[in-house]
Image (cartoon, rainbow, N blue to C red; front, side, top):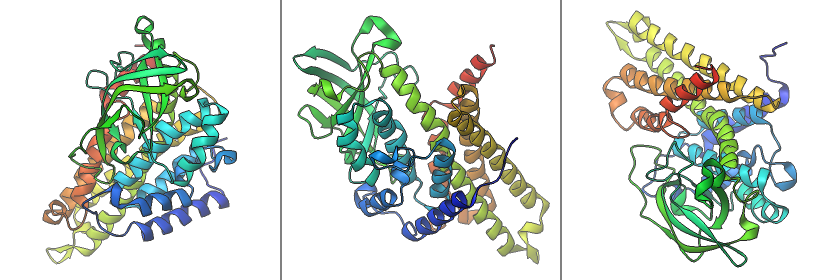
Length: 380
């Protein structure tokens, strides 16, 4: 039996988060995005967002994938700073959860409480200039040294990098082993041999700062290895399951927020002596937006439901990621059209939403990569 309802606890959690985040995130953007938003970041920790799916004994809420998605759905709808929600998602799904699931007792005790509370910020150091979708060809290397490993290489794009306290870095430890030759390391951002590049100027997601990270003879002790040497590939793919499913719930929330805005605008804006909502071209565009977001929502919920049941979810996750990212980009463009000249101006935040949605079709595997994954799961 399929139950499409939320119980009282789940509904109350969603409404509480929505209300609080609307209050906390009502101000406009600042010139120094996350650096000026530590208060917002700590608030996400206090509300439980940063540790949603981390076990309670380590400072999290211990929620499953579906409930975690609902948390980020509320965050995406209630917080107008999409970059902040994205940064929190990258922090939790790409960094904190790998430590929770694959770290030793010392790593979990030393990092998880601070990461869940918002005291510490994490950045995922995986992407390289020649290794985006193909993560089996990392140029960053780690060689054995007494008591640990020495990292060398450059990561080309690290979200949260300029303000990160801890980095989850992937490096090649056995070039002959391909996918099984990568290892994941937990590195203090202030360690000798870690050098941060300048903060990147980006199209959108302004509240999630990013930079390149250089590792230059950076020593990492053995106890900072996640899992075992050579397990970096599977660890990263597991983090992508969390990210592709739950991170994009934040974009569902953004799509809901856009839908709320365009409905309000269409009822209030008058042309030819009547609200523009009476114009079929307008009402049909909004109807398509609503249908698109609900279709994507069902795919995302199904993917999370399968994750919670321990079922293979590769097909559902790829379909969900594709539907949400492409759908929200289309909805944001429609919102600009519906707002007209106001949609092009910064004041209403509609153009910012469009800029924030563009990278959704690129990160966590491009839309073309998702189509390739879907085709593979269909045995094509």
